[in-house]
Image (cartoon, rainbow, N blue to C red):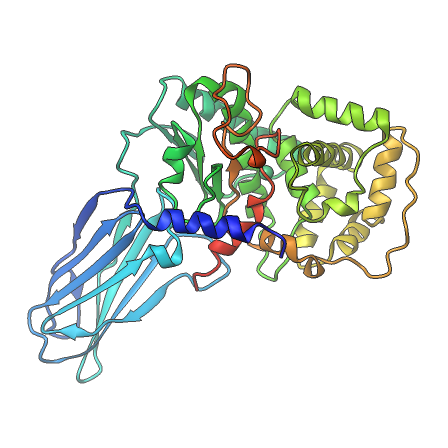
Length: 446
Ligand SMILES: [Zn+2]
């Protein structure tokens, strides 16, 4: 795989050390066991040190007849994988304790809900299951305010106008996805808007240090760092962009390893930002004038790591998706996403829906821009999702970090970039490399 593992590992090391969100919560559910047996639970607690760990503790009145104790826990999410985890926990005296170390597994985002229960088996094999307990993870460092609209809850803490403004952007983004692509959100999404991207990064273990936004699609949760002064110029399109990743991710979820080519994924998200930025328009105008677009096939996989080229790849992808939508309509676009979700290769899926492969798409798109046909060498081997390892993580994207506001092209009044200049690769609010690292990080959970 070509993504920047070294950088990604470096990020992990940095995040291992600090204990970031220091609050410990004690949740009590003692005495809630329902049973046919006489086992009485005297304590059932979870000590939450988000995002580091959760320690589950159980105490029973009399352990003499207890043969086995199991903890079952899960965090609410949409997943093709088994959602709950069962852990046998040894009893010491009349107590059992088990700690879920998130530094090993990665942490669920704030806003996600943890559920757990204990199963206590006595010597005759009778099982007592405690009532389900739940806890919603909170990033307690800030005083969150919440605004909501149907199916959207947006939380923020800095800048009075920021919440309402970004909620409006989210609603407009969802409307556009519905009206122009026919794709609707299928369950409630939560957005957490941090005042700075640094603040946001401290809520997530294993995040690239330059990331400014993450969409946890399985949890329906998006985190973005939006300094109030660029809420309108950068926050509004970024909210729409990330929402599109999440909604399209829901719509095209694949449990059979299907994936979407990057030009489609990013083209859709850029389209969903609304009126195209001047940068996008000038990239396209320059591409037409100088006949200098990338072969669309080369945009199947990860975009270039180099700033200008990556930026142009987003603009070109936007143009290709716009062409598909405006020429062949939203139903075909939906079919394409669903066909890809069935695990079909990119050429195969395009052929099935539009009657051309990715090269045919490129020629049709070029023709629509009055560009001469490009000489396309024959493709001896069909390029399928499986044969493009770099996009494989799109199959189950858990999260799609976005380049931070400071590192994105910012308006004149924005803060100067604070990250390594080598990372200011893209002039769009999205940074391609992170599309990859993250799927990986969060796949480790069984
Ligand atoms: Zn994106």
